[in-house]
Image (cartoon, rainbow, N blue to C red; front, side, top):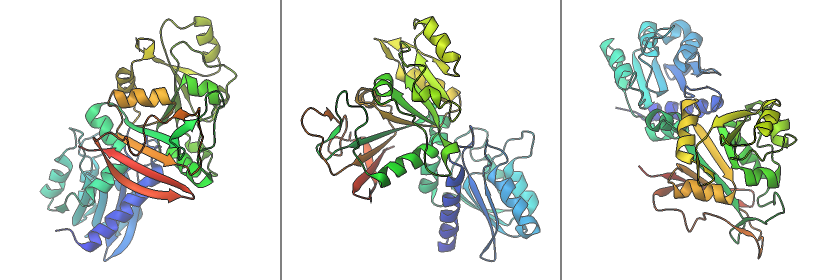
Length: 363
């Protein structure tokens, strides 16, 4: 039975797992702590790129101290053989006496098998400790494993009068510096960020992470651009050395524009067009096949409405600033009062003068 100490060490492991969110390729960012006599003797988090796994890193740090220790792992240890033995076997070989796990792994090569290997080796196993908290941080990996598409995070910032901007005025400051910093942290932990071509043309954004020290963690940028209207001189194109840029375009888009953009490093997503718009379910399937686990949708209003209408949103992140845009503004496609019933409020806080609320899809 899980103890208060188990929950405390697992909470620490979950915090550690955030270290490499968005940096581990198709693998989840998992953390492992090796604890002996109430002291952490080994720490590990999935390495950048996805290998080595967290268990391997933690066992290497612990060395001989892993013998008769307890391992806290935020995801069931893997059970399948690749170029290296599975992590479940590595834990058994190291002589740990107990393994405490958090989230279950839906991968058919792992599900239940990792724990079975441990139990067969005589190791005590405690499953499901802070499982929901661990799964929340790995939602991108878990969604892609089950649904074969990335987790979709719809992020919006609205004024007190429920507006997101003004037509033709580009970016309008809605929130303060603390909230904007939080948005950049969200970008640093995501695999990709998406906007429509209307937003790309009106705002000329970079969509990069500009927090000091985290610039290298900018996500891939994706623009819904069926007719390839994006300018080769845009900031999105100029910042390709910082983060990849993908355009979702139709096969009938102008070939000369495609070649001009491609020569500057733009990548293209094969896209189905439905009524002049990108077919979103098919696009998400393709992104999942490419290994993207988490996708932030930042705008604009029509794109947000489309994702909501097609029931493709898994997480809603809404920022509310204290100021008003006034008449003539662009109405927010979703507000705290109009969040669909399929979402449950998970978190609410303040960043400076701004209110932040997060809802997740109820399962």
